[in-house]
Image (spheres, helix red, strand yellow):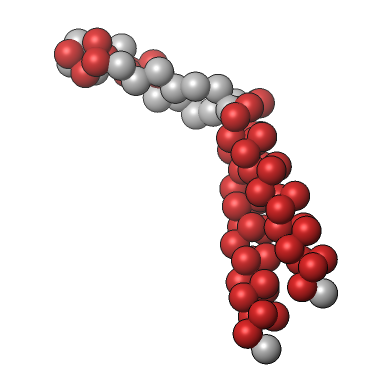
Length: 78
């Protein structure tokens, strides 16, 4: 059981890395800090389609990673 959970945990870890790398970059540079935030007026929109999907996938994979980590610790301690 320990080896199965460890294998699944490693697969989820790789999937989290892939999901994070696939998310579009948010460009926060020094010019936006000096402009007074006027450019941020339209950039703070709700993520749509692919961005929203990738955020949800990353969150779900993070929860699965956390649960598997706790299960692994529980199994290894007993």
